Image (cartoon, rainbow, N blue to C red; front, top):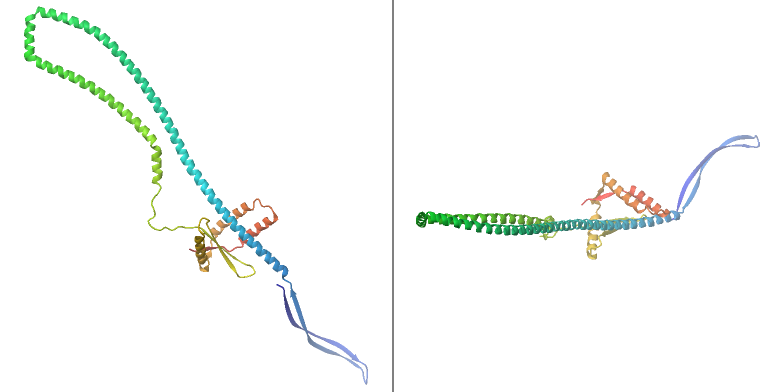
Amino acid sequence: MSYRQNYRAAVPYSGRISYSYPASQSGGSGTASYSGEVAVNVTINVNTNPFDGSVHTCNNTIDALTDAVVVMNAAQCAAIQETTRNVSKSLIDGFFGTIKTELSQQLQALDSAIKAGLGLIQEQGKAVSAQKNTMETDFNRIRSRYSTLFADLDNECYKRIYALDKNAFTLSEKAQKQLINEQTSNAAALSILEMQEESSSKMFLLISNLNRKVKEVLKTVHDYITQESRITALVDSFLFHEAPKEEAWAYIPAIWLESDNIDGNVKSHETFTVEYLEEKQKKQIAEKTDIFCSSDSSWHSISSEERDALHKEFTLLAEKYFEAKTGNTEQRVYKTMLSLWRNADLSSLMG
């Protein structure tokens, strides 16, 4: 506001003057000295209306700048959170989609290979069975023909030899019945039993070999089929599904803003936190944050490394925000922001 200032001073003066006077009885001349002080009163009227208007305009500009910074910070935080959620969702969906596609392809390839191998085995089995039947038919036909021939020859030979030495054969038959028949019967039974056991052993070996191969195929199929379950179990092994045994601390970000007016010492405080909290919780956080941050003893000047890092991030955000804004007002706001930031004394809160 305009004001008036009065000043009072005394201005000294001094000097010498020559004089002369006419003759009365006798004329003459001389020099006289003089000195003294003159009182001076000065009144100065100061008109501060233009300056007050500039201060008011600057105050409004700073308030608008504060609102712009708060809105920009909130938008930036929301964009970062949204980008984080999108990137996480894309990574998770892409990972499980890739695993699912790979498992499906492997299952299809394995199923096709198994079906092809099974079909080939079946065709080969049919061919072997047909060849076996053919060989058995040929063998039975040849055996029946030669068996009849040799049987007739054996009978004819037996009759002739038996007729030539009938007494010897009669004695031999009696001796065989009494002495040799039992041992011969045992040996024959043992031979037949060994032949049956050898045939059974070969059959068991064939069945065991086939069983082993089938088990290997089934194990391979089981490994491929249960691969997804094993991967799921492996992923679950890295996760903890335990309920908390006691209350746990939860950390919520909060922004505390302090602003003051240029034409006074009044300070205002504001606290900003996440949007998903209830109003009661936001109010409690704001009250405790204001009490904690209002203490002057908890603040200290930041180091040069921290200031350089903050300056880099602030400059990057400001340039990105004002990149497309080429108006005079926006550019003036941008330059004012940078000037205020460079001249600001940054402090950090000690917890």
